[in-house]
Image (cartoon, rainbow, N blue to C red; front, side, top):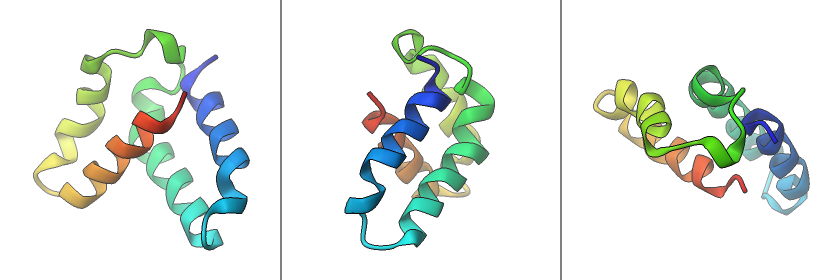
Length: 78
């Protein structure tokens, strides 16, 4: 399953457990902005550390908190 599709499935399955709609929007927004352009089309099983680094390195020093959250979100997608 492509990462983008798996992420959308994960969000839909978990959105009712998150405190408010803001969290759902933040998940979608950060993944759409940073992760999907790099690896949204890749099958989850094919994603390697190099792909994750391509997502995170450009923002790690300037948007550290965002990069940390994006990394955590990527890690949670089965």
